[in-house]
Length: 306
Image (tube, rainbow, N blue to C red):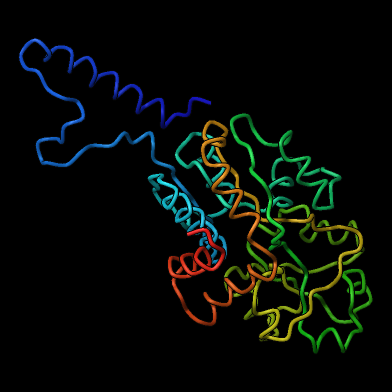
């Protein structure tokens, strides 16, 4: 794929080349010599742009990718906290961003809402055909950070809740909290009703979803399974036997034109990232208040990748 970013760069380099030929008769110079300011210039097309969602866990993984690439000799530009898929998928497609940590199930469902894949293996196998031309994925990790429907332990005990379908028997109004886009997702309120017969009122709680659940503002919440507050706040993830949520393993989404160049580096990261390890990374962010850069450096060193 010849991305828009690289197209603009190629055009600029062509113009520079023409100018250089015009000057060749007036002076001789070594193109590898430093510029007038004494510093060597670098071709911007060699820069790998790594992006992340506006989500601390995703930013940590993106920083791990970035540092691993830098350690391998690549020049990296970080464009973190871009937002949700509606914002960053176009940036990947037009070449503004080269590499992004993604989650297999949600990514597949974004492009193929009617997919019947549910297991980790089936979801990953379905991704290549679902992705737009020019995008591909590298190896998926065993680490998962997938959507769930979660309640407080007290609410689960009071209403004998073990799986999502048990919510249909609750005798109080159900208020579901989650990010605003949950209202339109296949696994949102409509999916709950169709697959499990559970009717809910939806409340967009965004970044305060867990806080709202603990406070009782909502009594069911859409929480990622690697969120350490599931443990620290005594929450219960309801089982999903009918597969409302697709398996969502951490996976690198990358522009196909650079996939081969970075595969060895990024696949080594994916091989080392485990479910327990991802929760531990998140604890370092939420509980220990470490920066994504410090968390990434420590993890890479501990796993022999730095």
